[in-house]
Image (cartoon, rainbow, N blue to C red):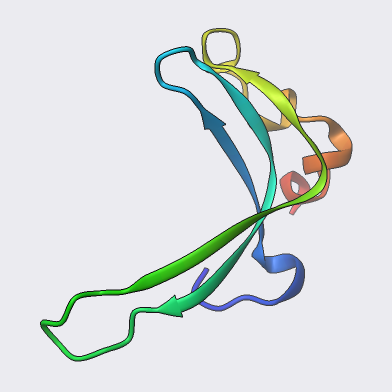
Length: 85
């Protein structure tokens, strides 16, 4: 996504702890606050905010869920509309 507005900025995500394999899966919106525009050779300053959208995230366990598609882990009310597109 280069530019997006509304529902096009809502994406699925999976977050988990590498040591325990426990985490969550859900939907979030991506908001770029500062795109790092500047002079060539200068340091990039990028600021991005992620916000939970919709239902509460579902539990994720890497050891049990790693081979499943996100649509099978996530509740249908959370990701169904994204998976269908």
